[in-house]
Image (cartoon, rainbow over all chains, first blue to last red; front, side, top):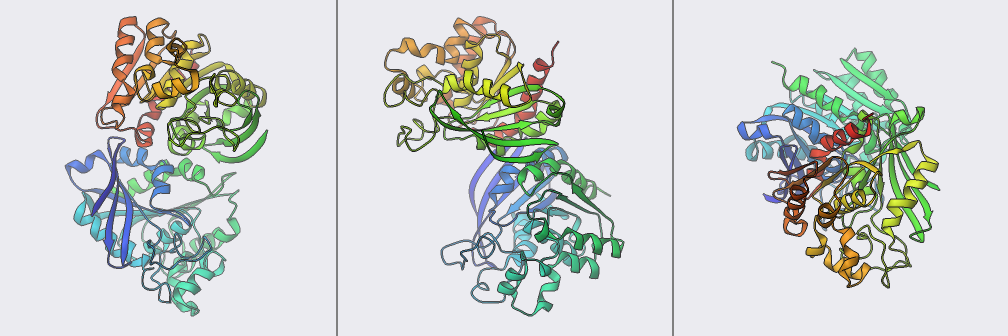
Length: 277
Length: 277
């Protein structure tokens, strides 16, 4: 592991680290904030999955999460959104390839050799964090923005028992019925839509649900509202009687100004679940 | 005036605006956060001057100030750090020319035609804000980081009665005795050091002081510590018996992770002065 940088922040440390990933077959970079309490023993871990075009850095510098995670004594990890490197396949569009891994394991060429973001987030990175940092893998929660909100919701529902709570900011709720989804799922997973279902939060909500609290915020002025399809998730949540708080926030858009506004409430929401018992 | 963007943020609006500046003779861009209370009437105005290499954007997206300004009902403006445009003189080094205006009125070629940042911050931009936004110019305070901390301190002391309080994060405290200062003051103002004195916070503190509270934070692990010369300002403050709080924060460096950590306290400090009477 290479330490790219470490900065003291809210009494803890905001680090950036690079490691060789076996599943994505390239070097991966992530941000990890450890609160001061991590010096004394493992602390709960909150995942924050970022959206299209982002690296590990955007949310780490713009979401304002460290203030609240420090207050609650929680670590927060900011993974990258795709494999990286010169030999990694890419696309000229912002919404496919690098910066757009969509948190799936690609089965199709040219993506399959590196685009294994599901396994990276679900298996390799948590094991790496548990082995190298003072985080308690028995107490994990997950959140994310846009494509990362899609990732958070689908990972949480596909890995029962892993995360105590899940939240999302402006998530892509129904990618199998959206231009933010159909193209990417076709490219990464192939044309057989049966392989897509586990990667659609609305379909997963209908089929499986989540054994814990769910919090989702979406802005009414989100410029990508039609692509996010919050109505599909709302309907599935209601049909399932899923414990959930779904909020439409008046006037907010898709930006980090929206995320930072509601970050305190999301961290508090997760803290309540992480410190229960 | 051109509205570049407006995003709802903590109940208010984070805007970016562009206007034609007469004193810098080019288009200037600034960020302005207006809290919700600005809809009901003029609100106090906090200035945040940024450091070397920054535009209006860095502090606006990374300093986490909007959360606290919203809580206090205060507007915060993020000006650019230099004139901009293809016909504006520049230097190949990061610490001279664009992104490095040093908050002075240049008298020397090739800088004089555009590098009039003192007048821009002291005169033109406040008048523009007062005419176009719901801000109360009778209640102003000023802060800044690094080169912008230098700007905040020197403006506050040179304009008695303008600002009720002044604070700084890792300011350049003594530019006339630092490599962050001597080169730039020579370039912009010429070799006669008599013209430099008003642009040195430690010299101004010794000569004039500030009629109000002063708060300065510097990290003990600041990688530019020697260039900042906090000891010069500390000595001048003590000699003058200036009302001030000067803090050395253990382990913090020069980054926005340092700034965001202490932003809440700086905004609260200014709010106390802005809401007095």
